[in-house]
Amino acid sequence: MIQNVLTVGVDGTPHALAAAQWAAHEARLRQSRLRLLTAWQPLTAQSRGAAPWVQEMPHWPDRVIEEARSAVEAAEPGVSVEAVLVRERPLDALTEAAERADLLALGSRGLGPVARFALGETGLDLVPRVAVPIVLVRAQQDSAAAEEAGSIGVGVSLHDAGEGLLAFAFEAAARRAVPLRAVHGRNLPPFADDRDGATERASAEEAARCAREELSEALRPWREEFRDVRVEEQVVLESPAPALLHGAAGCQLLIVGRPHLGRLPPRIGHVVHAAVHHAPCPVAIVPHG
Picture 1 (cartoon, rainbow, N blue to C red):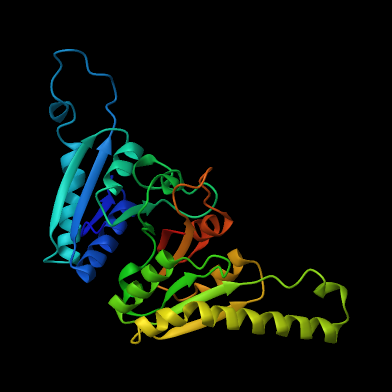
Picture 2 (picture 1 turned 90 degrees about the horizontal axis):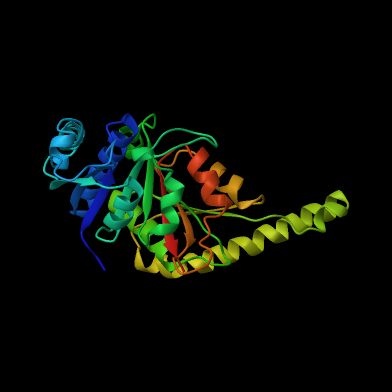
């Protein structure tokens, strides 16, 4: 169900501000409302008769919200902005907020296996909980420059191309009037390395040809629907995760898919992990299937 609302979690960090500015730009492109959400838990439990929570921490939440509001209004004047303060565990507040939004944006606190995300929670803890796309943005990414040029990148698994994933990707490229780069990584057949050089090359060429045909067929109906979007098809003969990261070079947004809620246990997958930790641009994680 379309809510026409984009929600971004803010906590006063540069990463969250970068996510808010990215979300404000996306809201302008979609002509949607932008909701700024700040959530926290009190330092101590409130006793009966204690002051209301607004009085318990009178400055920090308001300061965080106003700083974010000022940043997005300066970056994207005219976007409708609303603020929400929630006295709740951030992970729970974001999960609930996602039910009333079309997209959730968070700030990413850096690269590598210790990367953490906005509001003190691990972004990947949130991914299996929500049914809407999540976009992770790092402060050091030059989002303004990236929006000036660059493709939208999307990783395509031909075993499960995912209508939701491709719809999100084509719509993102169409809104920005930039090319869409569809990247598919495919390992060589396991027997290829056991052959002589000429036969190995022939096996690689055949594998690449088959992958290109399958990728073109998966994209064909979307090309027909989005005729103004220029599509770059890229087949890389290596594992999907490194193939996608190589294909993301120069992209302003990288889109990856994950199985939709309802699969038990919910899986994120190594491709999503690799994209989140190492992609040079904001990453959108889109449920599909």
